[in-house]
Length: 189
Image (cartoon, rainbow, N blue to C red; front, side, top):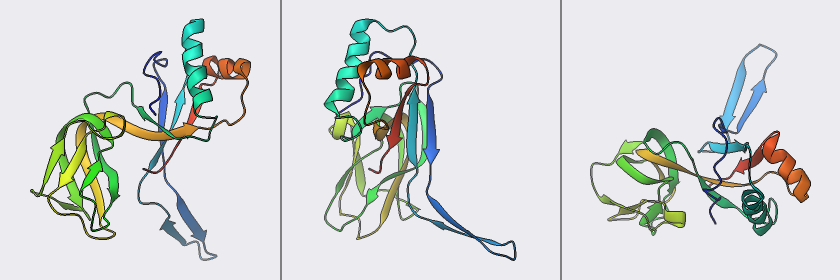
């Protein structure tokens, strides 16, 4: 499923990068950190201004179709059609999969990395065809087990999300649209 592209949220909606780090502090003042995930997740806050009843119903019906926070969906960043993105996680190799969705659509200037090494060839970019029209990378041979695949590109960022709230009536939902914005929680690909 894809988050509705219309109505568009108000300018100034926020996408926040979230990592998971375990931190241990010692009596000596030193600190030890351990990264718990290999990709950052993107939480989103979408405020809206002056919606018609029809537009409110589009958003409400989408919320209902997701069963609140139960079903995940993809959202494309509304304002970044030509922004450059770097070090975005694509997937992890399993020695059999050769086609992976890129975290974007309408991409150009793609650079593909396997375990941090820029790939000079051995892959092609497929326009569309992925989940919710995402562009794809097709390798001539599958990346090995546990190899991390990342990319850089220019284009529209694709985020996997779910609604934060699981229990909202239509009045509360509408109030959040105008006051604090609807909150989406970023998920792993």
